[in-house]
Amino acid sequence: MHEYAVTESILEIVQTEAEKAGGGQVESITVVIGELSTFVDDSIEFYFQALSQGTIAEGATLIFEKVEARAVCCECGMEFKPTNIYYSCPGCHSPVFEVKQGQELYIDNLEIN
Ligand SMILES: [Zn+2]
Image 1 (cartoon, helix red, strand yellow):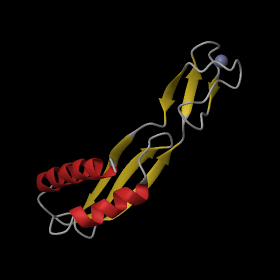
Image 2 (tube, rainbow, N blue to C red):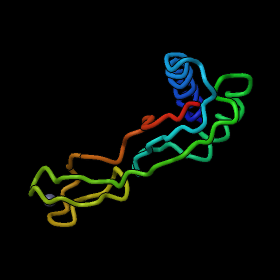
Image 3 (cartoon, rainbow, N blue to C red):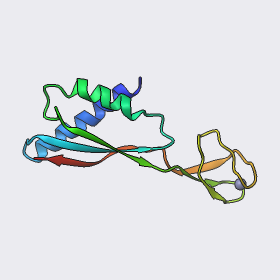
Protein backbone atom coordinates (compact mmCIF):
# COMPACT_ATOMS: atom_id res chain seq x y z
CA MET A 1 0.00 0.00 0.00
CA HIS A 2 2.98 2.35 0.42
CA GLU A 3 3.19 2.33 -3.36
CA TYR A 4 0.37 4.88 -3.34
CA ALA A 5 2.53 7.49 -1.60
CA VAL A 6 5.56 6.74 -3.73
CA THR A 7 3.51 6.98 -6.92
CA GLU A 8 2.22 10.37 -5.78
CA SER A 9 5.83 11.55 -5.37
CA ILE A 10 6.81 10.16 -8.76
CA LEU A 11 3.92 11.99 -10.37
CA GLU A 12 4.82 15.22 -8.58
CA ILE A 13 8.41 15.06 -9.83
CA VAL A 14 7.25 14.22 -13.35
CA GLN A 15 4.86 17.17 -13.41
CA THR A 16 7.51 19.58 -12.15
CA GLU A 17 10.04 18.33 -14.70
CA ALA A 18 7.53 18.40 -17.56
CA GLU A 19 6.63 22.00 -16.75
CA LYS A 20 10.32 22.92 -16.69
CA ALA A 21 10.69 21.27 -20.08
CA GLY A 22 7.94 23.47 -21.50
CA GLY A 23 4.84 21.45 -20.68
CA GLY A 24 4.84 18.83 -23.41
CA GLN A 25 3.23 15.42 -23.19
CA VAL A 26 5.08 12.89 -21.04
CA GLU A 27 5.84 9.85 -23.20
CA SER A 28 7.65 7.57 -20.82
CA ILE A 29 9.07 7.48 -17.31
CA THR A 30 11.91 5.18 -16.38
CA VAL A 31 11.73 4.15 -12.74
CA VAL A 32 14.67 2.35 -11.13
CA ILE A 33 13.72 -0.17 -8.44
CA GLY A 34 16.24 -2.04 -6.32
CA GLU A 35 15.71 -5.79 -5.91
CA LEU A 36 15.60 -5.38 -2.14
CA SER A 37 13.16 -2.52 -2.08
CA THR A 38 9.70 -3.58 -1.03
CA PHE A 39 8.02 -1.68 -3.82
CA VAL A 40 5.96 -3.68 -6.26
CA ASP A 41 6.12 -2.36 -9.81
CA ASP A 42 2.62 -3.63 -10.66
CA SER A 43 1.17 -1.61 -7.78
CA ILE A 44 3.04 1.52 -8.84
CA GLU A 45 1.74 1.00 -12.36
CA PHE A 46 -1.80 0.58 -11.04
CA TYR A 47 -1.74 3.75 -8.93
CA PHE A 48 0.00 5.64 -11.69
CA GLN A 49 -2.81 4.89 -14.14
CA ALA A 50 -5.33 6.19 -11.62
CA LEU A 51 -3.41 9.21 -10.34
CA SER A 52 -2.13 10.46 -13.70
CA GLN A 53 -5.62 10.89 -15.16
CA GLY A 54 -6.13 14.46 -16.24
CA THR A 55 -2.46 15.35 -15.67
CA ILE A 56 0.39 16.00 -18.10
CA ALA A 57 1.56 12.44 -17.43
CA GLU A 58 -1.66 10.73 -18.47
CA GLY A 59 -0.99 7.90 -20.92
CA ALA A 60 2.74 7.86 -20.25
CA THR A 61 4.50 4.50 -20.30
CA LEU A 62 6.20 3.40 -17.12
CA ILE A 63 9.46 1.55 -17.68
CA PHE A 64 10.84 -0.31 -14.69
CA GLU A 65 14.53 -1.03 -14.37
CA LYS A 66 15.60 -3.49 -11.71
CA VAL A 67 18.85 -2.97 -9.83
CA GLU A 68 20.57 -6.11 -8.58
CA ALA A 69 21.17 -6.40 -4.84
CA ARG A 70 24.78 -6.14 -3.60
CA ALA A 71 26.11 -6.21 -0.09
CA VAL A 72 29.44 -6.31 1.74
CA CYS A 73 29.89 -8.28 4.96
CA CYS A 74 30.95 -6.12 7.91
CA GLU A 75 32.86 -9.03 9.49
CA CYS A 76 34.91 -10.58 6.69
CA GLY A 77 34.48 -8.07 3.87
CA MET A 78 33.06 -10.59 1.43
CA GLU A 79 30.87 -9.19 -1.31
CA PHE A 80 27.69 -11.09 -2.04
CA LYS A 81 24.17 -10.85 -3.35
CA PRO A 82 21.60 -10.95 -0.55
CA THR A 83 18.16 -12.22 -1.44
CA ASN A 84 16.53 -10.27 1.38
CA ILE A 85 17.55 -7.93 4.20
CA TYR A 86 17.58 -10.79 6.75
CA TYR A 87 20.24 -12.66 4.82
CA SER A 88 23.55 -13.66 6.38
CA CYS A 89 27.01 -13.66 4.85
CA PRO A 90 27.73 -16.82 2.80
CA GLY A 91 31.38 -16.66 3.93
CA CYS A 92 31.19 -16.29 7.71
CA HIS A 93 27.41 -16.34 8.34
CA SER A 94 27.46 -12.95 9.99
CA PRO A 95 24.06 -11.25 9.76
CA VAL A 96 25.78 -7.84 9.82
CA PHE A 97 26.35 -6.48 6.35
CA GLU A 98 26.10 -3.24 4.49
CA VAL A 99 23.79 -3.08 1.50
CA LYS A 100 25.63 -1.32 -1.32
CA GLN A 101 22.83 -1.33 -3.82
CA GLY A 102 19.40 -2.80 -4.35
CA GLN A 103 17.24 -0.66 -2.07
CA GLU A 104 16.76 2.31 -4.35
CA LEU A 105 13.72 3.75 -6.01
CA TYR A 106 14.09 6.78 -8.24
CA ILE A 107 13.23 8.24 -11.60
CA ASP A 108 16.08 7.68 -14.00
CA ASN A 109 14.73 9.17 -17.18
CA LEU A 110 11.79 11.15 -18.49
CA GLU A 111 10.79 11.37 -22.10
CA ILE A 112 8.76 14.47 -22.87
CA ASN A 113 7.50 15.52 -26.27
ZN1 LIG B 1 31.26 -12.47 6.22
